[in-house]
Length: 268
Image 1 (cartoon, rainbow, N blue to C red):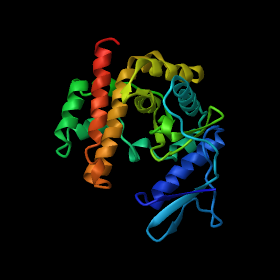
Image 2: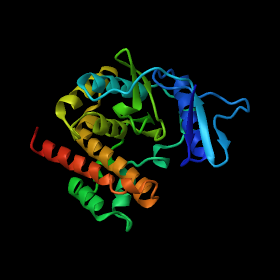
Image 3: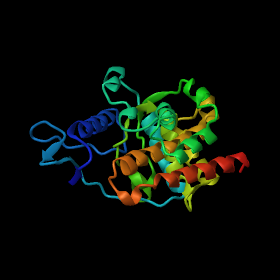
Image 4: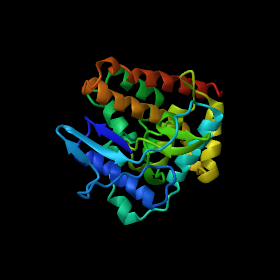
């Protein structure tokens, strides 16, 4: 049994996360943990200022980045994006925007007075059209993980067995989820590299082939994925000061986005 304690999420936020886990378990998603229900019937317990949840213990270790790892993570994300949904039940689950940041939220933040100058400048450099075409496009939606990097997985006998940390999960666009996952999984020395992206997409498209529209906007989604997690770090570490040593860590993701953008401009 695994006990997970949180000191920065309230009972409602944790309950929403567990409801998503229960839902995808009911839809036969093979990679997720199923939270234990307490004797009271609740999914979240509390003790003083802390809240927690109970999960079954799962054997496995987080992998390092490699072609095989990327392919396995791609398979796992595509499996999540391929679930057959109950529209009524799905609509009762939280939207991703309540815990994360999509394209519209990133645009609004870049225009806000509180936005750091370097974040605003990066956004304007990447998206001089203010994401108009992206925001006007209707992408397929469902449950997204919102934070699926290789270090949020467990591998057992060299195969991905469990996807962890659904803290950013909710209803959202599959393409954004794919961009977030690619941006933090297909890395070599901190840079996104094309061979690992190709390995990831080989796994993903074995389950869920991308549409021509999704392929057209894939690079947008990867950069938006980096800006989304960068903004998450700003909110958590810069504005809320949860870890002063991480205050400017958002800038690492801006650099990664710039490296990727310039690589694609050079056609590599």
